[in-house]
Every structure is written in C-alpha cells, then in structure tokens.
Amino acid sequence: MVLTSPPAVYTVLWLTAVGLAQLQLTKQLLPLNAATLGLVGANVVSFWLIYAVTAGAMRSRPDVAAARAAGLDFPCLRRFAGRLTRFWIAGSVLEIIVAGGLPIQWLLQGDTSRDYRDFGVPSLHGLLTAVYLFILTARFLDYCFNRRARDGWLTLALLVWPLLQINRGAFIWSLLEMLGIYLLVRRITLARLVQVGVAVLLGILVFGIVGDWRAGAGKEALREITSERGRFLADDLPPGFLWVYLYVSSPINNVVGGIEHLAPLNRPYYSTASLLPTVIRERIYTDTENRYALGLVNEAFNASTWYVNFLADFGVRGAIVIICLIQALMSYFYLQAKRGRAWGVLAYGVLFQALALSIFTDTLTSLVTIAQLAIVIGYRQSVAAWLQAWSARRGAVAASPLLQE
Image 1: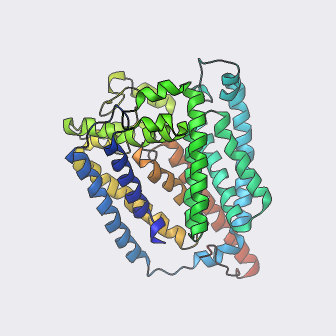
Image 2: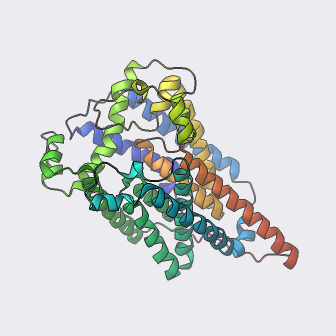
Image 3: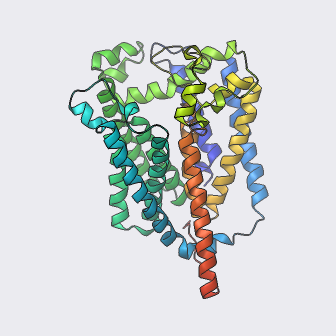
C-alpha cells in the first residue's frame, strides 16, 4: 500500500515535525527559516521520485526466491534467532555483573549517580543491542504470520528489557521496528489503524512515565518549559504528550538555529563518528567544544535530526545528495520486502526506525543499525544454505507465499 511506503512515511513525519515546530508550544522554539524548509522540501520531493524509479526498475524482475524460501523460512528463522538468544542472554548477564546491577535497580535504590548510559560493557553493549533487536523483530514477525502464543508472550517479555534499563530510546527503537514490520506484512484496514493508534497512545504514555522517572521532573518544571499557547500540554494532558512534542520539535529547532551559519568541513568528520566503536571514538573525537555539529539552541535539547552531521560536513547541497542515497537504499529494501523475502522484511524494520527517527537523530549510521543489518544478511545466507541443502535432498521446494496481501 502506497500509504505505508517509505516516501509516504517520510512525508508525513517531516511535515508533522515542521508543523509542530511552527506552532511554538515551548519557549525554546525559533521561527522556521527558508533554508530549513528548502532542505526538507527538497528531500520530500526526491524520495517520491527515487521510489518511483526504483519500483519501475525492480518490477520486471521475477519473484522466484519468495516462493522457494517460504516453506523453510520460519524454521530457519527460529533456529537462527534461538542461537542468537543464547548469546544475548549470556552477554547480558555479563553486563549486569560488570555494571553491578540494572538501571531500574539503581533507580529503586535511590542511586541518581548512574543511569542507562553507565550500564553495559562499551562496544559489546552495542552489539548485544543489535542482537536483541533482531531477536525481538524475528519473534514478532513469526507471531504476525503464525499466531503462536509462545512468540507473542516472548515478544512482550523482550519488550520489558529496555524498561529495565530505563532507556526510552531503546524502547522507542524497538517499537518502531515492530511497527515497520506490522505495517509491511498486514493489510491496512480501519481496525488495524485503530490498533496502531492504540499502540502509539500506550507508547506515548509509557514514554512519559519513563521520562519522568529518568528526569525526575515535576508538573511545575514541565509547565515552565511550555509557552503560553502550549500550556495545555502540561496542564491538561499526560506528560507523555509534552515529552513527545519536545522530542519531535526540538531537533529541527537546532537545525533552524545553525543552518544559516554553516561552515562545512567538506570532509567526513561528524558524519562518521558513530560508525566507530565507543572505545575508539572516545580517543578520536575528544574536542568537547565541537561535540554538537551545529551547536544547540538550548543545552537541554541536544538532538538535531539526521541532517545535522551531513550539514556540518558537506553543507546543504551535500546533505540533500547524501539523504537521496539513503532514500534509494530504503526504497530498495522496502521493495525487496514486499516481494516476500523475510530477510527483506527484517531489514526494512531496521531502516523504518531510522526513517521514523530521522526527525530526531541519525540512527542509520549507528553501529547498532549497521550490526543489525549485518545480522540480517547473515540470516539471509543461512536461509540460502538451508535451501541448498533442502533442494539437494528433495529436488524441489514447495511454493507458498510468505506475505499475505
């Protein structure tokens, strides 16, 4: 369905972010400028064009693998995910021992000197997060098709893990990957739109609760953030709505504040920082004055959309071109997923969260994202090897479509 395609999602997200920022419901928001609107508008148009060209180029290719792999895909997926689950459990136990407990435990004990950033082993933690996200989405994908109660309960149990870490980012990341898969593999009806709406509402409420836990902010403190026209966010609605508004509007506000004063480096510096493991990155990027590529309008809100590092390195035109390349990648994986390939569905779930979070930050160049995509590719190779062995024994594999339209 075109309404769930990457360009449609991108258009809705960015127009929403721009519209909410324009409302200026919190005090730190600046008026939108022409440079920011031009940047966003150029990539909204480019996404639709790139998607149309990619769809046209892929339409003529035969859909053979979808039929061949369907009969074996889920058994292979369960086996692959099961092995990774054992690795993830062992690694997580190690991290709990090294950290001396979980962030939820520290919170309940009144220890405010540590939070989720102090949990885990540097570099290893990123890999374990990627493994966790693959296991979660694999179980959820299996449940979407086969409706096994065991997979449903495992999915819910796995979702508790980010809450134990008091990590809102990981929780939202997990929900977005699941949402991307759900929108892809299920026909969108009014009932399902209601289900998604309820899930989003619950996510907002939990987001607000976790945010209050972590920030320790009372109602009066939240009220001080809002402008006169936005006072209803603090007075009349659950705190999750204000937190979501802040997270959606503040990043583009930082772009507005810095885009007219760009001095591009014309080399990859900021845009490659997150590609390095933590232990290496901390030794290379040591200049605290340049921690934020375009600076911040307000020190309390340090996210700046996925544009910020590309803008700092290559300017407006360079950022537009780089985002076009990313849009081509997203279109390719989405169309592969729509052709019935489970690895494509899982890969698009990863890219969907990067797309959804593009209004907030750049997660596409995160090592967690890169590692998760590498795991998906490893799973694809596992399916190919299994298919080859099966074909050698049986001579043929029964065809059965993976995606039910």
